[in-house]
Length: 591
Image 1: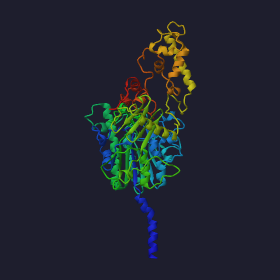
Image 2: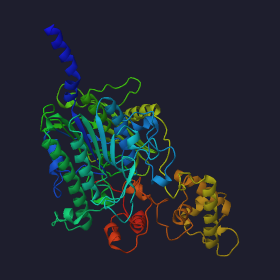
Image 3: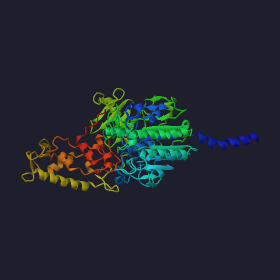
Image 4: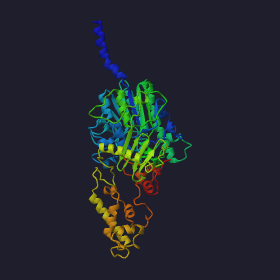
């Protein structure tokens, strides 16, 4: 009888014992953080002791990749645990009020929070969501017991700021009384969540919007950097210092409660840094946010789990953001459903030496016409605006400076075949990025017919300006760019008619012009109907493709002269700055 009673008590206590063994889980996700922005990755002018401590107490990954070179799709890859392309999530949304009605991670794809909640975890999120705006797709609808943050891709860091002042929410209630700098507020809310759930296993997703634009910091943080004389870099340093402090505050609470030994801590960035916009650094990598070069997708990546993962390790095999999804599930003892397979891999066996080989033999990225594949040390990059299809050997050429496509066609064909096989297995994009240029408030795309009518009117206007003798056709002397004239004059009769100019334009226009109205400058440049742009390329590169797509942000506005505007001036946040960059900014080739 005594033995039976002992067994009954043992089995009664078993669930509590098992619950106690479940580790707490923190995912720190930085926004637009460059590869060389963290101390352990080479940053020298901005100390990041608290982020460095995660790597020093555990593992630093040298080849850690984001799922995508821009914010929203990358975050969807983390939360879903798979290539986000499997459910058509290939592009950013654009501003919330212009976003496609289809935008968001569908309910048919279970989130990490939903899985952990079903596994007995309290779940909390603080920060930037950016993977669903509509009811049913918001954090509190997707498994988070607690949410404090905002839904779109960017917001001012000040309680009342000059722009991008998207609504803050606590759960699903609007917050109107926030008084702190936003990164500080996120730290405060994170600490309170941990305190409130200290007696049960918890999962906390801290999705910073730092160090994403707008460049805004408080004097308290900027004052730490008297030796940085560049105003833009000083503000960026202040933002990064605030992020590092926030990580430190959260980890201090974990230690205060005696939970550090039983807490898995994961840190990385959603994509590379947009260097020319924010002064972020991706050294020694080529490229920036929005590009398929290493600088757009290889990011700081670190893990800590004291007592499980040995400290001071450096792991050199390639890993990806969705691996943190699977690692968290495995640590929590939550099985992956066979009905919902995922692409991520549990990294713990690899970093502890229990598993041999690589977590992944190949990784893939796709964003419209640009794509990339990495197989072992070989990297395929296809970027129509920056050299077409290129091949690099990262073992000997980390900066992607020596294109091997011509010298090694066999390897090029091998990687292209691997990419093609993967690409056929995933979905086509369900939406494109939308803003006021190609959509109306509410998300309805401007029709191609409407765009064609406006284009025709612009062509007529340009034609009349060039037709000096008013004979309804342009001679080579009248045509502003004689070098284009021969291509426009299809029948070689020595004159360019309206019909020939229109046909030339339709044959050479960018595919994007079908979904947005081109500016008069772009139209004049493409058709050659302006002397002013005679030396310009066929179509000026869009700024988001030069310095990384500024996706998910509200449309840029002209700012009045004010203290608030001063914080944004010169930092890529005003319409004036962006228009200047359209013409003058060179393609970034790495640092």
